Every structure is written in C-alpha cells, then in structure tokens.
Image (cartoon, rainbow, N blue to C red; front, side, top):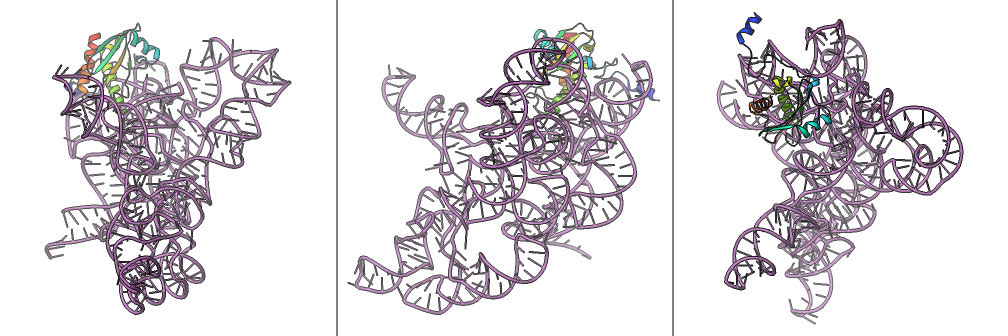
Length: 130
RNA sequence: GGAGUCAGCCAGGCAAUCGCCCUUUUUAUAGAGGGAGGAAAGUCCGGGCUCCACAGGGCAAGACGCCAGGUAACUCCUGGGCGGCGUGAGCCGAUGGAAAGUGCCACAGAAAAUAUACCGCCUGUUGAGGGUAAGGGUGAAAUGGUGUGGUAAGAGCACACCGCGUAUCUGGUAACAGAUAUGGCAGGGUAAACCCCGUCUGGAGCAAGGCCAAAUAGGGGAACGUAGGUGCGCCCACACCGUUCCCGGGUAGGCCGCUGGAGGUGUACGGUGACGUACAUCCAAGAUAAAUGAUUGUCCAAGACAGAACCCGGCUUAUCGGCUGACUCACUAU
RNA sequence: UGGGGGUUCGUCUAAUGGUAGGACUGCGGACUCUGACUCCGCCAGUAGAGGUUCGAAUCCUCUACCCCCAG
C-alpha cells in the first residue's frame, strides 16, 4: 500500500534530486587559511544576488564556506535561513561530488522572502562551474 | 448586543521523502530517543559560578529612598498608606529632608525672599510727611483662604469654619488616619541643583578558569633588595614583577567547564497576596564558521515578532490572529 | 560575546536649565560690459518617545543608529 502511494506520487520532484547527497563535516570550510586561499586565487562568478568564489582542490569532494555579514542581513533569523537555503542548494546539486572549494557571499540586494529567485541564481552559479 | 478595565493562555497542526546536531545500542553509510522563545532580543539591574589576599582599613565615586512582607538577591514582586486622573471597574507616581547649610529662579513686575510699596485707600495746609496692604496690575510662583465684626482707611486686630504647626489620646505591627486642646501663622519654589540623613556596592568576567599533545624558554627552588612598576580611582596593608646560581620543556589545536537546576508538573496545607512547606512523579537543546531546514499533499482561525552560545530571577522593548475568566458604565427588551 | 563613547542646519562646530549662535554651501540682491572677489539679506537644525520642572539641546528613563576597545 505504501509503495503504491509512492509510485502514484511519482519521483523525482522539483528541487529534490533522486540520487541524494549528504552534507557532512568534511564538506565544510572551517579554517581561516582555507578561506584565504579561496579568496586569493579563486575564480569569481557574480550576479545581482550572490558572489561565488571557486578554487579547485584535489580531494574528490567539494567544500562549502559561507560569509554572511551583519551589515547585509541585520537579523539573525534572516542570516540563518539564508545559510540553510545555500546549503540545501549545494547539497542537492551535483557540484558536491566534484573537487572544489567554494565560498558564497550574498550581495546587499538579497531579499530572503524571494526564495525561488535565490535558488535559480544559485543553480546557474553551480552550472557555470560544472 | 455596545463601550471599556484587569488577569491568564496559544504562537499553525498532521502525513510522506531527502538532509543537519547530540546521546545511546551495535560496528552496519543501520536502529532508537531528543532537538530554540515568550520574549531566546536590548544588556538595564540583581545573584550563582570561576580567578585575583576567602576579599582587609580609610577617603572618593555610584545606586536607591512612604510602611510592612516575599526572595539567594535586587532598583524586582505582593499588600497597605498618601497624592493625582477617571462617572466607574481601575490606572499612574525616583513618594525621605527646604525649620542644617550653599546655589538658582530668565523676561515682566514695586518687590523673587535680609523683603518692600508702582497705581491706589485714609490722614494731612490736599505740599512735605505719616498710617496701611482691602483692591488693581506683572508673573509659572507674591507672605494663609472665605465671611462677619472692627476702623479715618485698613490689618489674624477679634471671632466662626477651613488649611497649617505643636501636644495628648484612640485605631493600626507601621506608614498613616481620626478626635480633643492649643498657637494666631511660624513664612515662596527647586533636592530628576549641590547637599544632609539612612541602606547597599572589592575587581574582572566562561574569550572566566583548568588539563593534554606539539612548538621558537615561560616556570620552580635558594640567596640579595624594598628604589620603581602592576593588582578599576587615591592613601595604607598585602602579593607579584627585579638581579645571581641551580633544576629542567610553554601561546595557534583538542578536551573539560556545558547543563540535574534557587529545575519542571500535580496534589494537600498555611497566607488577602507575592510566596512558602510536605509528598509523589519526570529529566526536557548543548552547537563551536556554529545544528531545527527543503519539497509535496491536506485541514483551519491562513500563521506576527523573531534564533539558545555559562546558568538563573526580574525590568524594558517588538509582536499577526485569536481564546478563556472576572468586573464596570450607558441604553434597549422581558 | 563582553566593555566603553557618541548623535545639534546639506557639512564642520559652539551654547551655565531661560529667544539655538558662527563658518562653509545653497538662493536672492548690490557692485561689474560680463565673471571672480567683496558687501547685504534669506532658507535650513537639537536622533525618536516619555517624564522632572513655570520652562529642557542641557537633568532622568526607554528605543533607534553610529563609532571604538578586548579577540
């Protein structure tokens, strides 16, 4: 009965990849030296919502770092939800299996209420590098 | 049904899939359990905890200020007193002292505090002078208020009532209230101006503090010395830093601190209440670039403000939409 | 996270609780054949709310924003 319902609903859905990936501790940028390397020698991709910096590593998996300043989003709730949205998009993209170090910075015009626009922008960024 | 006052509560629910953090069972990309708030916020107060002399003396500085109680403590809370606002239910109040002293009170006004006399009133030779403070006028504020007697005109000059001060008595734990007697009136306001009186405050803060590994010399012991420096401001007091000799391995990372506590819930009792006591029962976030999300379906009242970072008690501020209870006022109908 | 300081015309800055002043800028006028310089005049402000006071830029409380320090 359960499996019949699942088949009836149909997969995959929008925004959820069928072959799912995990966002683990090794997928994060933590040290200041790692951030510094990406900032100094990375490639840039800029649009009106995000600035994305990418640098190749030889690990076989990608690592994500986020820089969300208090000046761009003053409330902690907005900062947290923007981080969640970027992480979710990173996890559902295939870029997580490539070997990149990625840093995402929001622009000043980011509005947390327009989630679909943010998602489309992030997807185009990922596609540019894969 | 209308207008209001007070107190309390909720803060989208359910299901599926994919993910994140912690604990645990077992070592399997497995299972089980738990996972933000009423304000987590502002950091405005008070405490716990840790270290510095287990915390010392004096000065300075600061906070608070009716009375009684609650609490670990408070500038918080509860009850009462007093004053103000409201028809009322109720609400608001940093609410000691101006008769200890100092300062300030612009402009106007005669005069802003040792008092004094501009227009006036009365007397007087209608000149000088004298007696007055009823009336006018200025001001935010003008030396008790109203009435009657009295007088040349007036005046607590006298009387009645009110206000004020002092004493006694009664009620109340007290703040305070009431009554009686007495004084003819003590003398403006400002203490959120200095100040006086009373109470309280040692400092720094989990990036406190402790342990471990590596790493480029911090430390320990003995002797000398008390000139200087450091320990929120100053003076003491105390401790450390200083020089020589001997011994011998420290700041970036990780772990602890870290959540079982002035804990929650229920019942009973005491208390007007804040709250307290006893018993039973439960364990309910602990991250460290920082965890609660995404997608879809469905229901409704259509979802606001907003994210723990050592922990509690308060205060303040933000907040969509509702729900419950008690009470007040006016109108209508029975 | 903790500690400290600040907010006055568009800009810089002053003001003992008693009419918020000055400079630069802007606007108008005068001078000049025209412009500059110079002179005269005008506009424009106490971060917001509440309280104490007869009366707050000033005193007190709360809120908002900015800056600095520890790291």
